[in-house]
Image: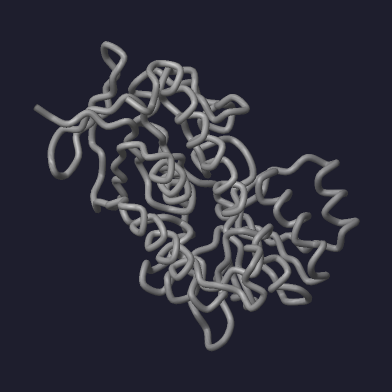
Length: 304
């Protein structure tokens, strides 16, 4: 007979680990399953996370959070949950070590950045050096006064370029495929901001010394950093498998207490609609974990 968990936490990034710390300290029975590819792990050095005035790498931050969770008895299991079902008020999941049954599930599965078309190893090297960046909220400050390229399409690329214009006067919008397809009003806004527009396609992106090079028809452009504004893929399939609703941005829709529309299913972090920031993910996780504890207490006294 499979042991019945109070909560299965799926995802071991900042949201999942924060929730695990709370849940363990509430004396709830839980397990954490982590695929091992949190976006937070890719951050070379974060200066946005409060409490670390000299910055901290995403990897170190996640490892510290994991050690804190383990201090309270949490075991983080590596692997993917391949199936999630909801029946008779319980959740049934398939993990790398076998079936799991839980009263509640917290999804902290995050999203995956859509990378620009380039060699995978070179992409990772450029990311580590700050030649490629994904979050202007996190690190636009680090690109202040630099030559910045935004690789995107239509309004997504234009909006990111306009956001980054607040950090540097040298911003170039490069369309990934060809003509960016922007309205006259948007083109006027970009022109007023002094943002250059280059028609693609971007045929080759590579590291060139201490810069990032982008080949477009007839010439090569070099920049201090490149922001791909290509969107991301939300890891929400486990939630939709049990009937959870998506918002317009394909993230999970939750209420103010991080409940999805499925009883017993909660979500926190980048998989949820909102600002993709570590601090925000941790805040949501604290809310979700406390809501889980209180919802479980309505079903039965937790001291029994």
